Image (cartoon, rainbow, N blue to C red; front, side, top):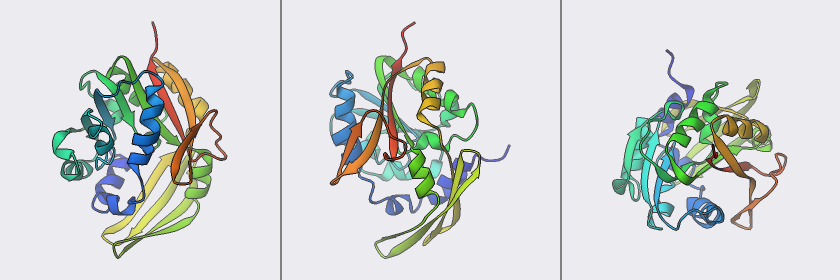
Length: 255
């Protein structure tokens, strides 16, 4: 079987990932926006969290600082190696795992998968399989949090060329647009890496809601995400033409 495209992408990019995405502010996203939103749906002030597709562990510090116990998993061993070296990584149990076949690590108050991780699920049934695995790791009453890239992000972000410079190194993100139905591709090139292909699948909110329901999850909220004056603002309903991400909050559906 050929290696998964996301595996190849993140094994190749692991060494420069944090530098290339240095502008991503997880304290702003998770700490000041998403966790307060989850509290409205009954999330406790602290508990046990499972970070699915945790990458280099950028979401760990906002949770650890608030007293959470965190477990992380990712498809890429190279990304996990850097997660173990990151701030708080020595306090997090890390496992290599494909979210399409997620092990049952335990029961968690919060299962989260941030920064468009589920957009890397390209197959028809991949999202459903991943959501079923996340549901199996939720404690009754626990909350699921994940986001997907919006239509406008794919149309603009995957069609333009963007240059990033950080600490004397440079990279170019070259958008190639829609290369097959609902699948968009960009190439990343620059210091410290070979040219890397990045493929993601656009999934409209209606499709995500259907997959959540089929996986035995109730969609509590679907929120559009945008940044206003340096802070994340969440609003409902999401607008695929304005918001750059759509954030979903779910819970095990009653039987």
